[in-house]
Length: 242
Image (cartoon, rainbow, N blue to C red; front, side):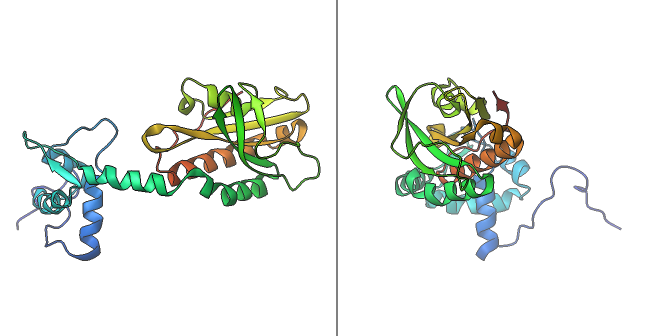
């Protein structure tokens, strides 16, 4: 009886039947998704290894992607991402400014944490509170949207002035700006890895300290969610700075 000579060697290959409908879209997206940070171009063999698709299937899909300028074949036979992806990405970035996402996201973060949720951007030598949803608790800080605070004090200030904000993870400070207050913040990124701002939680120091682990987890999740919505690179595994 004949066996499968490829069994046990390399990734599972997806059937090379004609590409139609949703399956074709999914497979085409898997080809585009095979490109990683630092990949200028990939060979057909590399695409096959990363997607698990047959080379014949990949070539059919690449022909369609090339016609729509989503992929480009180089002179040496390798394949690169096409200019249409940049065009679509730029349209997405321009149509979805950060302000559109903040009300619902900050409201959910404030409800989950019980503390005040804010989004900060750098404004010359200060940080500007672009949006804020106050804590449901009666004891809370009295800052408001539009307020300016000198840099680099506070958790959000540290994020906005860091040489490498992505490496910080979530920053927590206790009594740094106000002896009775505490805060934590994480960086949010837009397209191309540009720093879009800092999302943060703030409240009375004792109350923040009592639930700091939960606050850090909620904030890391919110920062990654907002980064994803803005078309930015996702945050690396979360660390904590204090």
